[in-house]
Image (cartoon, rainbow, N blue to C red):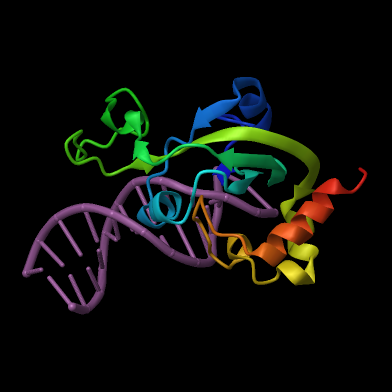
Length: 148
DNA sequence: GCCAACGTTGGC
DNA sequence: GCCAACGTTGGC
């Protein structure tokens, strides 16, 4: 799950404990969050749009999907004038802080042959939420556990 | 249903 | 700030 650290960083999540994953405005990413997640699932917290993008920590899905309030707020950059409370387009889930690990930068992810097929790293991928296979999860977890 | 134009994402 | 890649919009 990608977030710009200027908006919500892993440290912000640690302080807050739980945050709603607001602002997703891509149908595929929304569908992954709505349909492919279950309460208790773990996710990598990825920092994007910053000097050194990469995986900063782990969070846990802790709610069912519910409407993203920012879509109804005209003052929000995530406002969607075509969405209504009766038929909301954008759903989110809450996530809870689990842990921080050694920062695994995008360049390091790209250097690992075992991650060559990871959806996150696919050419042209812009989805802010992508699935992770069990093997990818295990190998990244090992990288995060290494001493820095 | 096609496709050009436009907007956005996100790494660099 | 640039630009490749992709998604969305809207005319036809």
